[in-house]
Image 1 (spheres, rainbow, N blue to C red):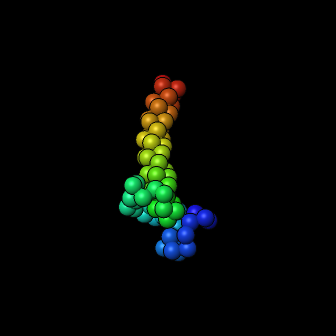
Image 2: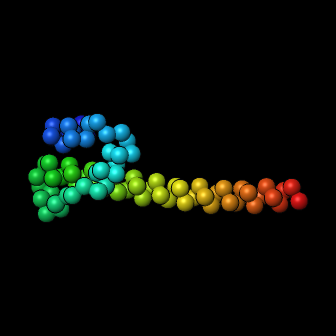
Image 3: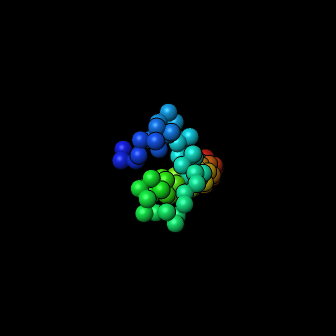
Length: 79
């Protein structure tokens, strides 16, 4: 983000982490314009944003599974 063009940095500067990631993941990025520095920044930020959201969802799913396993373990240990 530090090396991104001023206009891109300025448009995202006020966003906190979660809104920043959601904005970038949803952003439009013209993949055919990857040689353009601004476009390359948008492509990269979109990719990172999507990956972060996917990991966040996976972590949430795993936390639900872990909680269920722990609850089952606790029930069995108290039997």
